[in-house]
Image 1: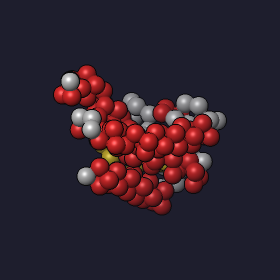
Image 2 (image 1 turned 90 degrees about the vertical axis):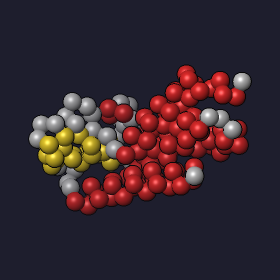
Image 3 (image 1 turned 180 degrees about the horizontal axis):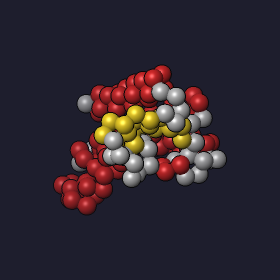
Image 4 (image 1 turned 45 degrees about the horizontal axis):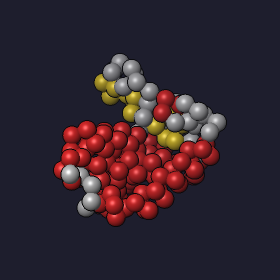
Amino acid sequence: MALALFALILAVDQLTKYAISTVFLPGESLPVVPHIFHITYVLNPGAAFGMLPQARWFFVLAAAALILAFLAYHRRLKKEPAAFYYGCVAMLAGAVGNLIDRIRQGLVIDFFDFRIWPVFNVADIAIVLGVAGMIFAILFRMNEHE
């Protein structure tokens, strides 16, 4: 199940990024709901909100460290509450999705544009939901094993 979740997130992330990059030009925007939601093709050199645009190798190394940590602790993580374990899987899939972009072109493809928030992608959603699942497990479910 975890491998299927990982593969699904990664596939949707990469397919949507491919579709955006073949249909749009960088900076091009299509209003879906005018003034509220647009599809906007952005090439992001940094992390969330474009922070640290010159730190490409830091993000590559951080993602590699995350992958290694997940593999090293996988057996232990499988014993944790489902929200924590699948949160880790989602976060990892998102990190790998953005890592692929960074390695391939040095930039991350973003396209969901709500106009009041920085533009983001499917991998970013997976990272945020994964971390939210982990926090939920820590705050409300970790006592399942006590």
